[in-house]
Amino acid sequence: MADDIALELDCTDLRCPLPVIELGRRISDVEVGHLIAVVTADPAARIDVPAWCRMRAQEYVGEDATAAGVARYVVRRLV
Amino acid sequence: MPLDSASAEPLHPQARETLLAALDAGYADPRRLHHDGRRARLLLDNAREAVAGALDVRPDEVTFTGSGTDAVHRGLLGLLGPRLRHGTAIAHGAVEHSSVLHAAAWASRTWPQVSVASLPVDRLGRLDLAAAPELLTSPPAVIAVQSANHEVGTRQPVAEAAALTDAPLFMDACASAGREPLPQGWAAAALSAHKWGGPAGVGVLLVRRGTRWRNPFPADDRIDERGVGFENVPGALAAAAALQAVVAEREEVGVRQRSLIEWVRRRVVETVPDVEVVGDQDDRLPHLVTFSCLYVDGEALVHELDAAGYGVASGSACTASTLEPSHVLAAMGVLTHGNIRLSLARDTSQAQVEGFLTALPGVVAGIRGRLGIGEA
Image (cartoon, rainbow over all chains, first blue to last red; front, side, top):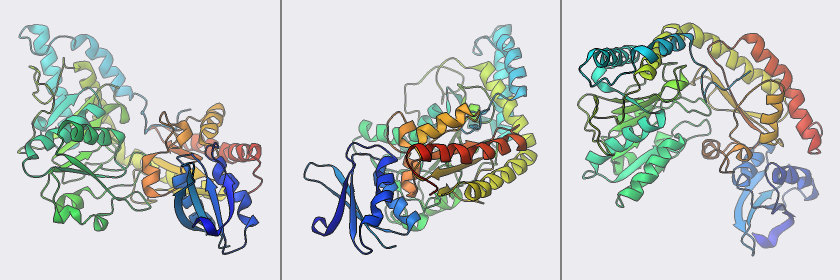
């Protein structure tokens, strides 16, 4: 998954709703069909990133972790 | 003005009147045989009969407890104890109240053979029985299903769940008790008086006659072997008075609340951009609604609505002592930030709801504006 990510947003220390706001702001910076990732320690992001994808008709690809062990949520831009 | 009756309904006028009278008339130890003791005992028995009548259960199925939480613990764990030879799993819906989750976790620490299984819910927060076939293949020792969800209002399929398994069903009915008849199918149930306009510090444990139930905690030599401690006679009597009053008026109040909530559900979507109203829109409790506003900080939302005169609850992480988002919203897979739960008291008026609906769009837009979000 990691190799294909076109843009990774470092929101490690941001709390809800800021990581999702950042995702909403920057999604258009990647091409349709490409991946954008949000790195954050915010526990709400595990629920809110997939929910945002559903509300915005984007694809939630899944969760992994950075080398530092911070959760990373990966989204594919569909629209 | 509080719009948070799902946390605590203001004391019902009949509960206040009864409580004030019973503080003097029911002070004594109901186990004593002297005049004042006999009077306290009579009041306690009256309270038990009134609660049983209002709930359509038998008086000997009613135990007063120190809280709804205490009733949950006793109800669930009291069913579990006698079943440990038959099975070792507690199965509960993923959106049960935290008191159920804590009781299950305590049981698995206390009896190492006990495991805890969380049953999935759908997007509306309803227990998905089709997704829980393990109920049939490997029956749990006890299953816990709430009557309706306390955060989103969705009613649960209690009777259907009970029919799927031989295991006794524990029902947390705190969210619905008084407002709606009890669903069928439970072996034990828990209720909380302050949620129907009774005083705080009074819960009700129901154990169906013939059910195998064993006190999971130290015994006490009081009137009711299922409870513990000196009986709160004034509280029990006031809780019973409130319950009788609420049940008598619930048809009228329920219809009014149901249509006000339907109006909120509709208007919020029309007037606030990027809002998600969650829970079942029809098969739900009459008095509450939950929604989440995208790109909004839940804590700011609660504070600013409070400053505007409207007291609401929130399931957003930033409003929780744990800083974790609501496990109910998480299990449903719906947005957890910018979340509000609005719930109506029995006398909440249309004008008050309209005031809230008028204030909300500006409050949301203001918070979004400060976070740099324009018209979304």
